[in-house]
Image (tube, rainbow, N blue to C red; front, side, top):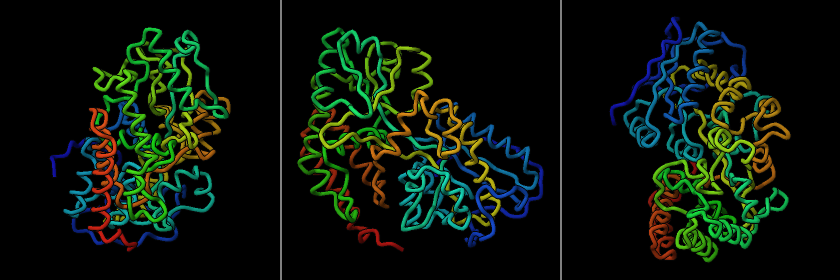
Length: 440
């Protein structure tokens, strides 16, 4: 396991009754503690790992942990920050070594592999029905595997087109709505008009993010809007025939044409083309809003996903929290988790990173996502069937890796059918090697 970058938090001076360590024996979570329960019911030490996301997120989490420390004198939090790019690999290495912490944050779709692998314990006995009902249905869906809830998050996510209103109007491009999104033909025409109006690369796809999870999260909605997908979701046993089927191939041929037609820069030097007015459109998520709003002001538009043939589709899901099976003190961990996902702390994080608040009570108070607010379209996409979860299967780590590799090669000009064939074969081989990932 790589040397970990450790950030110390001396949050509390209190009684240390129990820890979460390498040789700890899992204990069943108590049935008396519920998320949002009154503080003071538990004590001890809770080890916590989190990914090194954007600076505003780290600052918000630090503030949350400090606020917890000020209100809870019996629980000490030992927090460790890990590099985001290698986060999943380090979690797997720690699990094999028996060194997982009590509280762990992780990207949404990895919950299924972690739960299947036995890394996490269910939260059902730690969350009340009333509190559960306050979370967005997408948050509960994301955290549920085999009928059990394994994770909760502070925020959800979504994709859309950020647009420069002045540049669209100059090119004579229609402003789409959720009720009337761009069609494929309209989007293609818009890109052609914008390029003809002097923009070298009118669309930004955040290719600077690299091959990681962005390629799957950001671009699989194009497959789904064409009628394809990453895997056959009827039983999650086979990618062949779906990922490399006619609809998916057509989708990725269209995707490749964005580069061959010169609409997208495959190797941008940085992350500022849209903010600097070099691109008129940016396909990205909520997290870009603070910088874009600062750069464009009244010219910034937040537009829905396009309908490429089979309905508008966008990604959903994001980083969330779970309690590991190695945690000796789940009552204390649940108390920390309850504070992290409380409406006040959900709003703190949402204000910092521009993400969709995970709880309805927080959305109602949000200046960004409430009714009529500038980012309310993300809430509408999450609640109106536009958002699609990433495949709910323990095979997801292989799915995302195989698809990302295919995207990388397709952007470079490789044959679309051949690349999707290879990706489908890798996924099917992994599922076969794991006997179909039977429910344990």
